[in-house]
Length: 190
Image 1 (cartoon, rainbow, N blue to C red):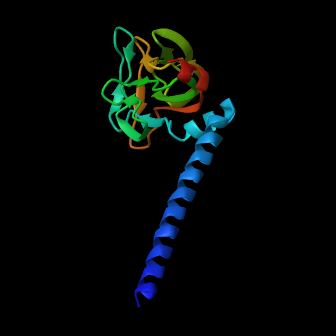
Image 2: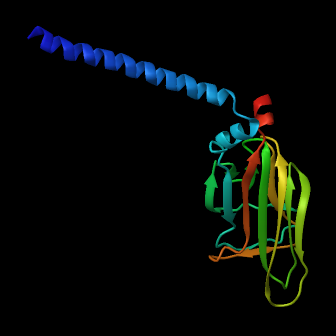
Image 3: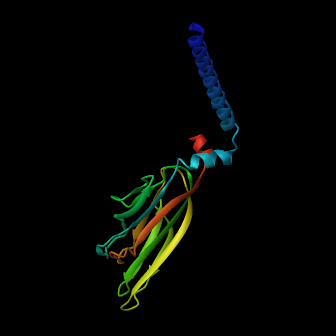
């Protein structure tokens, strides 16, 4: 009877020891695989960790402007803010990682007055749209750009002095952006 009980216990112990050895070997093999990844493979693996995308509109607030000086627009109606890089209190997007980002914006106005919008990177003008007064009709203008950003770079929209934009519940005046890809070399060097 003691052999009948002892044998299954020994078999259980042997199986447990073998399973933990197999699991350990699998971990070692996986570690070796990740050591030999190319930069592209490592980038793809890490890309899943860096999800950055935002989309926002001015929201149903009516007219913004005109002001006597250029102002930074604050888009308060946030649809998505993956990675929390867009600040809806300041209107500023701050790059969380080095990489190439895509930005787009649109402006809507009643064309009895001009509309002028510009996208800035760290205080430098990148791209613009401008609608001249054309009478009594609504108009929309848009633009987009891809930018190489370093971690901490800031991107934001400015409304030109003496111009205005309009928004409503239809969200015509928008600012969006997302990370296209990031620089693994820069990430490794930081």
